[in-house]
Image (cartoon, rainbow over all chains, first blue to last red):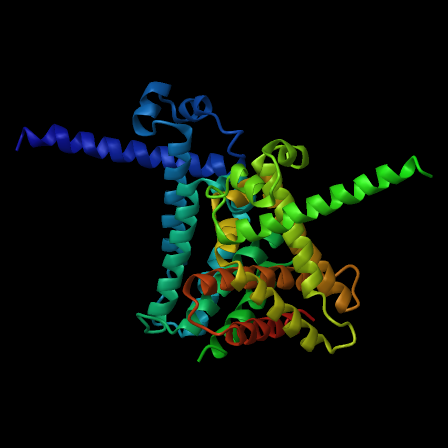
Length: 196
Length: 196
C-alpha cells in the first residue's frame, strides 16, 4: 500500500501537468498561427523547463497534434446534447455550440481546415475521425446503426456544408450565429427529408 | 514575312506539344496516384526525351500543377450551361456534369481533396480559385454581382456539401449519379430559399 502511493501520486501529477499544457496549447494555438507558437514560449508560460516540456511532448508537432486531439474531444463533449430533446432541437443545439466553438477559434479553425496543417497525414486523419464521430452520433440519434447509402452521402455532404459555411463565416463575420445556424438547419432538413 | 514564319510555326508546335503533354497528364494523374506517375513514364508515353519534357515543365510538381490548372479549366468549360435554361435546370445540368467528371476521376479527386497534395499552397490556391469561379458563376446566373452575406455563406456551404458528398460517393459508389444529383439539388434549393 505504502509502496503504491508515490507511484499513484506521480501519475496524478503527470496527468495534471499534461492537462495544464494542453489547456495552454488550446489557448496559444487558438489565437496564434502554428509558426508563431514557439516551444520556448510554451515552456515559459507553463513555468517549466524546455526539458520537462519535451518529456511530455517530444516535438512541437507532437504537441500540436495532442492539442488538436484535446480540442476534438472537447468539441465532441460540448456538442453532445440532451437525448430527450426532439431530433431537430438536438441538431440546432449541437450546431449552435459548434458554431460558437468555431467563432471563438476562428484563425485556428481556418489554419486547420484550409492551411497547410490539414495536410499532415496525422492531422488529416484526426479531422476525418472527428467527422466520422459526428456522423455516428447523428446516425445513433436517428436510431440507425448502418445508415442507408443515400442518408450517409447526404450527411457527409451536410458536414462538408457546415465546414465550408463556417469557414466563410469566420472570415467575414457579417452574419449572426443564429442566421448561420438557421441556414444550416434548413439544409440538413432538406437533405434528410430527401434521403428517405 | 519569311523570317516570321518559322517562329510562328515553332509557337504552334510548342502549344501543340504542351497540349499533348497536359492531355497525357490528365489521363495519367486521373488513373494513378501522384507517387505512381514518373517523369520517365511521361516522357516515354509522350515519345519525347526527358530533357524536352523538362523544357516544358521543370519539375514533376510543376507538371502536376499545370495538369490541375488544365483540369480546372476543362471542368469550368464543361459545366458551363446554356444560359437560356431556367435556373434550376442550369444547376442540375452543371451539377450532373460535375459529378460525371468526379466519377471518371475518382482516385485523382480523392487524392486532390483529401490527400497530402491539397496542402501544397499552390494546389490549395487552385482549388480555392475554382470554388470562387463556381461561386461567381452562380451569382452571375442569379443576376447578382455582390451577393448578400447570407447567400454567400449558403452557397459556400453548398459547394462544401457538393465536395464532401462527391468524396463519399466516389469511395462507396452505392448510389446512382442521378440520386446524388437530386440530393444536392434539394440542398441547394433549401439553402437558396432560406437566403432571401
